[in-house]
Length: 453
Image 1 (cartoon, rainbow, N blue to C red):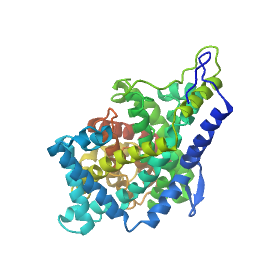
Image 2: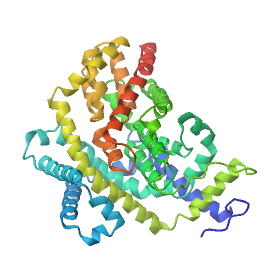
Image 3: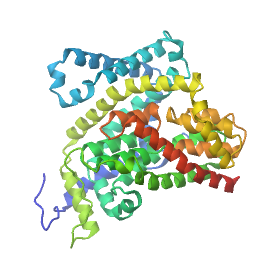
Image 4: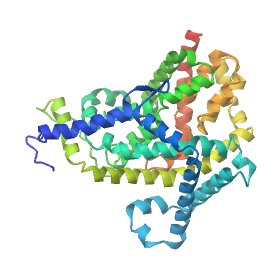
């Protein structure tokens, strides 16, 4: 129950502090607590998700295909029949009432999934390196990631921990990255856990009035970095696992440099500082109140307004539905098309010719062979590692491998997630930011690489 403020501060009681601390610490534990599971680094969210993936591995492609088919059928039904029960529902109208372009994309996504699942239809679509990667290696796993994360995310968002930490560290984050202090939680959530989960956290914060459009776009494209476990996988694929601390340390340095520079140049610098709904953020500390008092007051007030367990489950269901019925089919369609272009056309070979000269300028060996890997990551995060596995020079594998992980924007998953959200980002913005991150971070990575090798 909300209480009346005194001297600008929300009353802090023992019960209020416990209501803030217990769910918040649970949320931090689930999303950020480091542990070793199956001889590798992980977090509780990852352990739960991977357990369910192993348990349901044979059924997940069928489950993913069902979600995509339902999305396509319901979107078509809504487009042509305009059913009142969908149009009158804020949640279902937002999910299924789409323009003709996205309707076509969803229908294609469902068709591609069915082709891949049955191994019939267009061979280019159901090939193991195109539709096979999308359905079996990506989307089937994302079903479980989003299911678990959606219903646990309210404990991270609704009980005041982001308000508390954001107020305390605003003085560092705001001047460095031009962002609210609470964005640090987004950074940690995606770096330690899963890039898609970090992006969903950002989207939810924007939707609920805690980030402006510019701030949310900046966090999604500069802070939602590839998770540490995935970095381990990529380092292993390109035979650099033995030097992982240097590999990951270089990624962190380059990522921080990009996060400082990219928000200060177009297109991000030109995004409007407008909230999607009336602003809810209160990180600026009033006079005659200490930073800790203000942080605790905000956190307890947030926790008191969070509602009960039923409210958290309801929000989790909305988050999951908004992702699963929107992202899956669209990602399947666009991702499969992108992989077909990458695998079966010389498109990326041609457009990467300038990058070959850039790599040569930075004295990176095998520049021409490695150049496509510097740009093909815009389509999918796995392809650069596949290309680099055929490169003999360790320096080149190190430089371009780190680059592929710091570029962030991969259209097969997180890129699509940004496009279908309410963030003020379009495909042109994502392409420009991807290129900016590539051009800015490559010299940093190359310099460190030359120092190591």
